[in-house]
Image 1 (cartoon, rainbow, N blue to C red):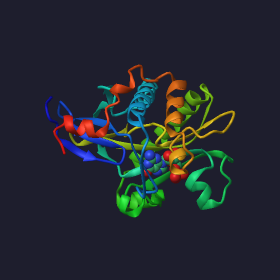
Image 2 (cartoon, rainbow, N blue to C red):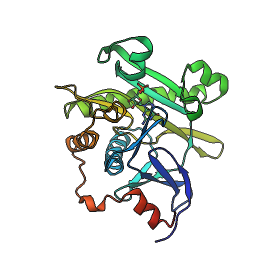
Image 3 (cartoon, rainbow, N blue to C red):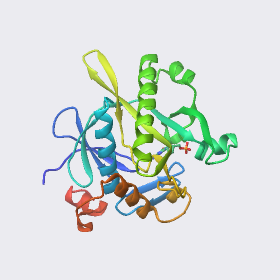
Image 4 (cartoon, protein in one colour):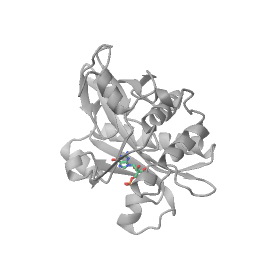
Length: 260
Ligand code: 5GP
């Protein structure tokens, strides 16, 4: 097996140089973190499921005309994506009050919002990804006005599509986080959807029981996170057909890559 150059290791993914210029391989880990990595753990099989769910969602989004970095899934834990210059923003879309919004403004979790909210957070671990205003983005040049327009209109379209997609399988899309990146063509750049869309970065509640089917199970010590991720994959029809023996763990993965 040929060795690949590791570009970056994040909390839930490892990025490797891809086979062709301008491509990257995203490896999905089972590692889970919360509260700016103050809480760490593992959700068995999460990487395999998130790889599948993200493939499923990105493929469908591309069918409705959303440009994304996704090229193809390579195996159980890896997908080939386009290399982008990540825009240092987390774009959070909210339909129902929950999480930091509820905490910050004292709005009860589960309260439907009168209209969809888009919030921006500055991607900086050392600062704990602070909430920012569009004014800050313009002031510090993190994204241009045109890029902001593109990101917000894509976020709304993605939300509309995903609300329907999840509602069809009995899941309420409470909120989610998106990341975008730039791709360059000479002097011109355009913004495309990057990162992943999975229960790691979405709040997904069962429509009937309000049971949480997302990373809040881990964040809030509710237990049953493996089952919850499996349930989302099962409802979307993307449950892995391969056996658990193929769910390579990170130690084995590193060994195969020749790393300690
Ligand atoms: P909140 O701001 O309420 O904590 O999060 C809002 C939504 O964005 C939730 O669906 C949450 O999963 C997602 N989100 C916000 N920040 C992050 C992050 O740093 N990592 C991940 N995986 N999701 C995030």
